[in-house]
Length: 336
Ligand code: SF4
Image 1: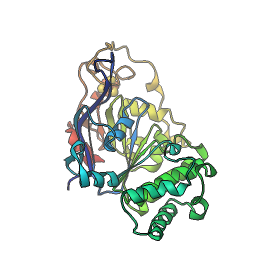
Image 2: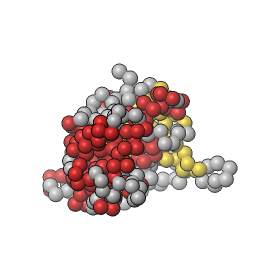
Image 3: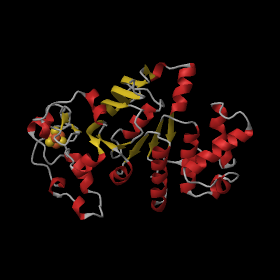
Image 4: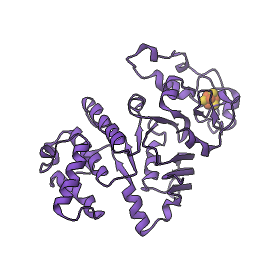
């Protein structure tokens, strides 16, 4: 079946034009498929500068790739017009980091829910629209009588963020792209918001792409995981496999830095130490993690490692696993 969304060899470079001295490669030849027919949560994890937000913006059609193609149901997203573009705008919904950016302080929250209903001509009457709003609010665990008719400042950060999830839900999307949805809310509310995303995913069968810098929450909510580092995917697969048997030195470093409550989930910290003396030239063409990698070898600075299929069944881009068969990038999706 044609996947819902696909990135094919996508790169995104910011700057570098006539007026700019420097170009930043935010995404470097990334391929990823989101089938859309399996209601799962896929987490994309990476630190700032890893390219994860650029990846989300490309999937949402907010920006265009510098090279490569973003496909929606098999068609080049940048060429969509008219009814097909409207269909995409309804199918793929965003939930952002900052719910305040969506609310207008002078309008009651009803406004933020009514606008998309009117835009996509959903609900023939006021009563029907009201019913759609109520159902969506209840689906994310909010009481309509405590939310409708209020102004944004009368609600908690957690309620506001869940209203944004409800807003996305009303459109019956085929994919929700949630970019750091809990990074600006109180730690005590994070679990509730993530739980409502999980409920939406399981009860309404909406696939979710969860973008985060936080491996701990990714482990908590997702079925599959993609780990990014400096514009590229370094490891991908089933969340349990990746977290319990991480292969890439960067993933191990991330896991090491999490204060897991379960002592069995601790890995030795020897790999977070200094590098093993490999000279890494500044302009090298090799592995993007070579500068920080405690296991770097001379070959790591010569060419970008391909994607290998590790023994645990997940994909890893690292020369330490080169005894295993190489995966064509498109196959990555089969593992997710
Ligand atoms: Fe480290 Fe080399 Fe693997 Fe890159 S390819 S992660 S530098 S061992």
